[in-house]
Image 1 (tube, rainbow, N blue to C red):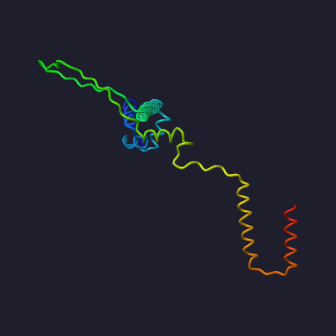
Image 2: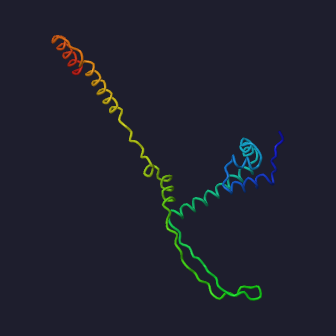
Image 3: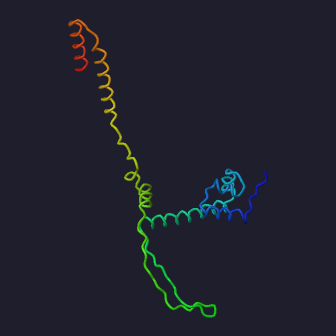
Length: 174
């Protein structure tokens, strides 16, 4: 199959698609190629790989910056220009500047913390590591309870019970 790679166009188009937030699979679909071809082109054409990598890094950094600003709250200036149009030109009479504040977004804060401080902000805390001896103790108790249930319905002569008790004491003392 003949490659449809064009050294001037393909990296440029791929960068545009990456800038729009598309992942490799979606970029491949837009370029009309298989996803595997994207990976092959990344290996074969360094300029293609670099165009995708650089663009994705820039866009990711912009998103991180926006998320940070939303988590912290944003102060900005809004300008309102009033004037009169004279001969096709705006004759500015007044510029009104208003400071505005967008409060922090709880969702942005939660997202940031869940990803940056997972150990503290998970929905479900990590379960503490259990001591293997705890499992052994639980297992031993379960066996004792099961044995007690079995022995409960059995009637033995007193001599046999004394022998069993003596054997049990020997096992414990060892």
